[in-house]
Length: 387
Image 1 (cartoon, rainbow, N blue to C red):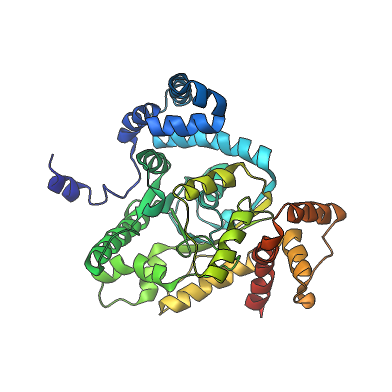
Image 2: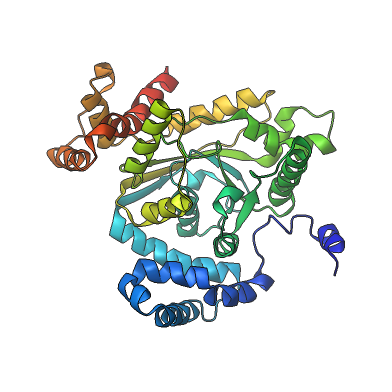
């Protein structure tokens, strides 16, 4: 079959998640991928990988084949991931609470728009919440800047991720890429009735300020407007069944790295990531301590919105009104000495204060302000949204 006929039969072949018929071949490829095997052994068997790299790769390949034996569907692959999520929560989180999922129709696909704090865990927690509720998981939007290695692309697409273009060059190429992406989002919601998760803006909110980019709204409604040129924006929003999602972490495993980036951006005008920094952030997010985690699904938006900015404002309103403030947020604001009128310390225990002070003491002093700022900002923003 030619590339042209491929595109005709499956216009989203290059960006969509893998399908069941592609699972077995992809898993077989991963079990022999030298870069993946080296990455796994460096992380789990550092001494053996250094002294006996060939043996360590053989062991890693055997482990992968054992773990995925009998897996030949996307659902089967995600069921394996669910067991790792349970272990991750047991090892690195004190509590995980979900609100609002009971208000959503279990047989309806939604476009979930969430605030973005962790590269992989934000959609993973959405998926786990849906899994616990007995519902289908989401297709996840992921930027192509994170897919620098073929094995990373394979793993993400096996986990129902689809690719958001960020590396296309030139206005024409970007327009074509966004039209394809918008078409896929609309097809997923309206034809497949399959939910999607997208971040409210490009990149994580490293400073703790959650704000929706109206350009995201323009992109996701592009396909509807191409097919219904006289329809208003509200009709496109209602068709996509857009639901804001708010996630909050008591502690961010990547908070020191984010503080370092915030400081460099402020003082030097920019920050250049190392080659595999995003991958390191994914690993740190998964393995690092999170304390308590709270996830809340909001209310679907209707057709009453007539501008992307109005849609973005409603997403922001719901994300901030549903955001759970933990003791770490109030203790950070207190440490900064700002907005004493916003402090609500009635649920802050001595154990909370001790844990907070221990974590702050482990942060390089030059980064204290930036570390505190990312925890304190949600208190200020939630208060502003409530006015």
